[in-house]
Length: 145
Image 1 (tube, rainbow, N blue to C red):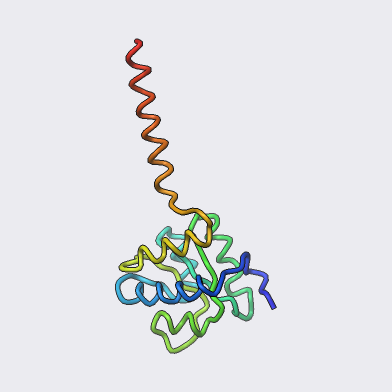
Image 2: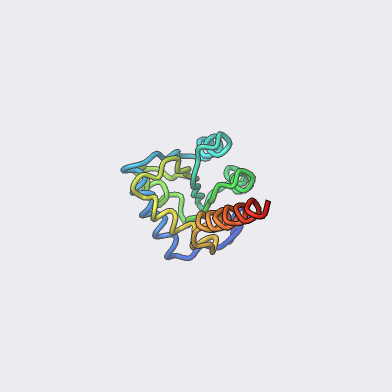
């Protein structure tokens, strides 16, 4: 049964890559565990990626997280099991949600996961191209004057 807070489906391939990326983050980056810590991290603007378990009961524990992630423009994803989510970050107990504050060695892996979820390859290249075209347009305006 799908939970009401799960806003999109994530393929098994992406879920597996998410668990692997979180293991790398645990070794070389900074991760916050639990729905309260995730909420604080997102609201303070520290989180760069959020992962939410898809089997949380009661749902109200994590129901607010996708909404605040969208408001703060923080990418987020889902995994199937809170027990596996806890294990991927080195806990022996289940974990409802995780916020990545410093990606460490998992930076490229997380970028790939975000690209697969959002369907956008690289957001950073498009604004650079627009800025370059704007800079080229400015000298042309100055020359006729």
